[in-house]
Length: 400
View (cartoon, one colour):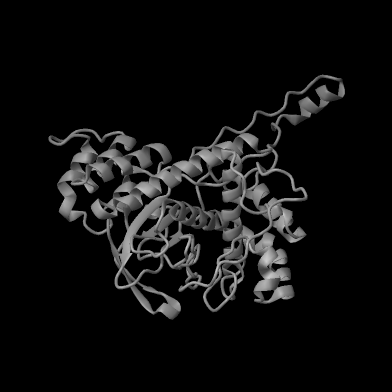
């Protein structure tokens, strides 16, 4: 989970809640995954996250004759490559549960009509995609612009923008938080529009990285359940993630601009991918992270060259190294830095500071490990050279 904060540049990060779920916060009741989807992601092609490393495809069982033929100099054809596995998707039944988690009865007639594929007599079920579009129109009726944004998001990215369940969340030092479902419509419609724009931006970036990758990209960023809510008399948490679901707070202090929302979503989706890759950050980055912490503790001056981002916890240290956050938050901050720099390279924009990989050797190792695990080793950022922009001063502490 990204930290909540109030920063001059509107790019603050929220403190992580106790690690009770896949990312940084517990899942809501009945929502361990989007509409019953397991925590481990379904296999996907291209930009999706496949289950795990594949071994070589075994040869045919009729190998004895082939071996003899090979010994005689005959050429044995290689085994056929495995057929691509389906991309991740949200089924119509899952979409129904995401869009109507608690108020099915109030919309039963419309839901039934979407199931039939018409508004009247009984008939065969409608195609999955059209049924989800029908459900979106039903959920967002009364706000045509929001309905259009939610439909475009589903058509383009496969993600479904629905509702979180009402529940109490243990917010640690913040106390018990009361979260209630609320749609991003009318005055709050900008949040849905920012979400749709963010997911389209990530789609474009991952496609570009896939074209430059030396191996398959294994970063799922599509078919995400998006559940909107509001915290009562609070502005935390801004977002949390578990089971291919990202919950988004319309009152979150972080959600003040399209840029902030885009990075928040990328941060949370990284947590989902990290978990789906077997808690990758814990195994891969702990030696680097632990070494930095052992050397610097919480001293800001020592940590500055190693911090992926500049945000400081009020009264603490860099968010990436704040005690209690752990290596998972360092990894998610590293993922944001990777995203920012790859995005700038794709757009031909000059970085405002030296590339992260051009700092201490620990930075380059962490950068390379993340790129190899999730993005096929792709790196559009130019090689390091002398005279690169220097790193800026850390941002002042914020009210978390």
